[in-house]
Amino acid sequence: MDFESKTAEELVRWTFQEHGERASISCSFGAEDVVLVDMAYRQGVKFRVFTLDTGRLPQETYDVMEEVRRKYGINVEVYFPDRERVEEMVRRFGPNLFYRGVELRKFCCRVRKVEPLARALNGLTAWVTGLRREQSETRAAVAKVEVDQAHGGILKVNPLADWTWEMVWDYIRSNGVPYNKLHDRGYPSIGCAPCTRAVRPGEPLRAGRWWWEEDKKECGMHF
Image 1 (tube, one colour):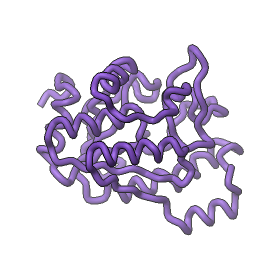
Image 2 (cartoon, one colour):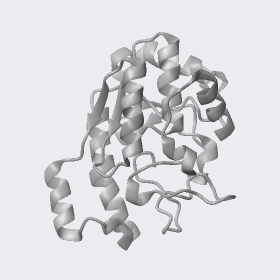
Image 3 (spheres, one colour):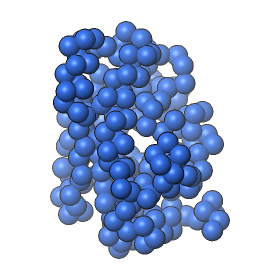
Image 4 (cartoon, helix red, strand yellow):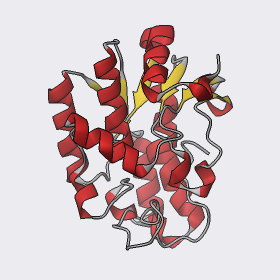
């Protein structure tokens, strides 16, 4: 199948028709992810949604999570980091270790996000993400459908890979999709509260993530 020629709606429908309950949408409740939830709902397919609660999320993220649960009548499968791993990390390095260097920041991401993600994906044959090529140079080559070797060779479906930021917001406004109110305050990309800030005019969309770092910035979930 020529996945690159398929629309986002077609890919969402195909994923859940083909993989059923062994597929799930990865949802951090940013703009792209709520579009995917709405899209799946409108396609009339039975779908699953999971999220990673790192323990450091902003209240606005919990607010939109609750809105999404109510509007679409879905149960969001929430995965938390391992308690003992978090306790050990904080005892050893303190609660704000991520500000002290890239390696410590990546370690925090691994404990709070990457390890819970592995549990969330266990047993799945496909997961759906809101990755877009426009988001950053590290995502410029994202395909609409990929084999995720890092997670056992399952399929990774990125229906919005070729969408622009404007297309995402056109969809949200046209369909009345609930969204994270931090977007209205200059946050195009939203992660953990201490690791996310609003972007300034002219800055890249992901400039507010780990803004104190200069390297290509990812948490390890995708790259």
